[in-house]
Length: 312
Ligand code: TUI
Image (cartoon, rainbow, N blue to C red):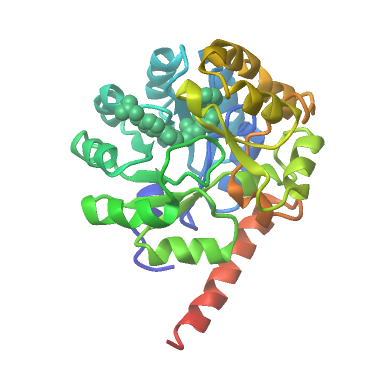
């Protein structure tokens, strides 16, 4: 691919960034994606600094390719993790669930590329002003903690509003989604859920199966009343939360129900009372394959589509 700003910025073969999903995006997944030519990303979630550092060392042992770390800004360890990342000189930091403004200068001084995930035009503009190298714009189709706007509408608005490269996220799982994102003006994509259903992902097989088996309307949103909307696959937990959401006084009970629920699903394989975070693209995913096959199939489908679309 020629003239792609994201490929130049990240020094990767393909403009595909893997989502930094808590518990799921371990060293194994990040290394596999980076080896396959994308940008693998370790997801910190709420893990303490030593755990994240171990994961970084593990990826460095597995590959010389560039990789990134996603810092979830609601984590109590975010400050310490940022300091450690500057020392470890990772290539890229992506952030989620908050405004990373106060960390950008320190990361840039350590020669780290900073790519915040944002759900809106205003935050994208602020991040560009603060020195971000690129922006991941995540639509509400994504899994986990989400914003309100769709990928289709927010990506082109951010493309028009900033001059740094824009990466589209939310709902992208195949070559069609990739090409749609490029048509909206993105320089690349971030993909999460499709990579959960990979051989290298350490998530429990029941977690992967739950995504593979899910259909178009199964990835629903819980937690709107708590102010932390989270997209998960429908199950016993989601039904319980949906019921509790009928009464605003149940806010604390809902928050308590979600603590530890992601680990329960990802690690223990309890996909009924655990939280199976996944995006709307779950309905598009019907198999588990290697990260290399995922990436190469996306790029092959995209390049075939390019020929098709040139007819118009
Ligand atoms: O961060 C994500 N996805 C996540 S984080 C996560 S862990 C978690 N679990 C339960 C509750 C909360 C978090 C699971 N999935 N995606 C990136 C993302 N960032 N989506 C939306 C945002 C975001 C939201 C508000 C980014 C910035 C922001 O700024 C608000 C402000 O401070 O101005």
